[in-house]
Image (cartoon, rainbow, N blue to C red; front, top):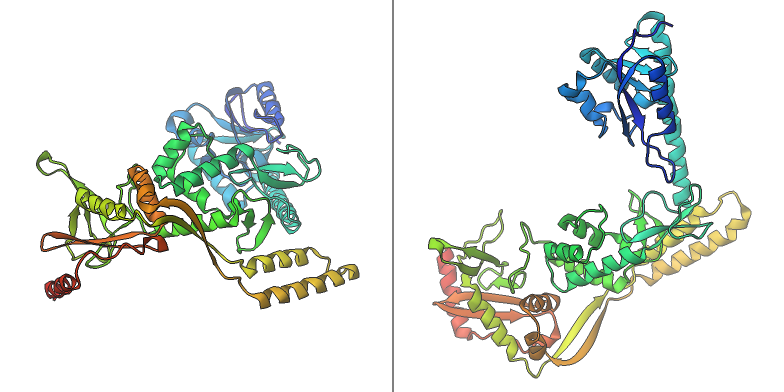
Length: 489
């Protein structure tokens, strides 16, 4: 076989070591440099990526600029790989695209075992065979990896990386965190990151905005999943993950792994209910929301009111306005000065000196589907051809029938009596804490201007607020409603 003429200026397409505890260039690629120098080639650079396999050079983070940037393309004549699989293990189409790149840019592709491209005639036979063998090896490796993943999942062991808040523990060695290469893995709460999750949940229940939670976590130097500063999207994703209650599901929604949770079911239920209630909010969220953000509603159309700031002529005005939604814009033109509405709410709650502050938590009843999933997972792990498992399989069927008959248990409303009046409790909070209290108790403030006067109606999900009644006479409401219907006609 006749190889390409040299000496050449070459770059080496290398791979970062995947071995435990190593972060440098793979040993084989160190040998590739020695081979290139023995051939008389000048090594311009050794470019290593963790991605290889079927990923083409222009999609690898470190190799990309060398094959796309004109300023770098003129610096070398050939790309060298230890074997062809360093350059590609893709199918014929993918390899043809890399070959076309070499043709278009006048580059050569070399390997330390004597393969080279461009090549023609009998010189092309080893190249063609090698690229098909490389792709076939990738297919075999991928299938072995998928079988291994299915085996681990079916036996209730970890596949993939741990979710935030958890660390890997070894099933056999019992070490936490486990660094064994071949040990089966499980999950347990990480002492540091699990505490971060609890702080995050506590901040959210206190009424902090996403950005305020990020600032608080950064100020406490709490590490994030990325190792950089906290981002709003990261906080939102973590609080929604079912892994917080010790479950991981596959793409079909089947529970494939159970482990010790960070949050109990009661806290998880309260958290998801709060997230669902706030899901209607869109757009940028202020670092410090206005005191009635999320609680102020229009008395005319019952739509939510948004806090707005304007500066006409340089003068600052703040107010709550009924804007409606983009697809259904409001026609109410209802707008109330923020200070006036906030003062009215404070005045109304200050009258509740004889009403005890009661916190209420809705504890969701047990879902039979969760127990059915657990029984099904255990049944799947039994050997269908082993008679010894027949008795256990029959027991699981009986248990499943009992679960189906029992159905879902009823939700339970748990109350905690604080011994402090609503008025005194509210007065001792700062504006953001007051807002958090209103949202947690399900208080809605319906307000509008009637003949220039503020009309305000407060409703609450909590029974502690039964004393908050309308302070607009029936006659006034009837007159206003008739006038409003006339405006819309």
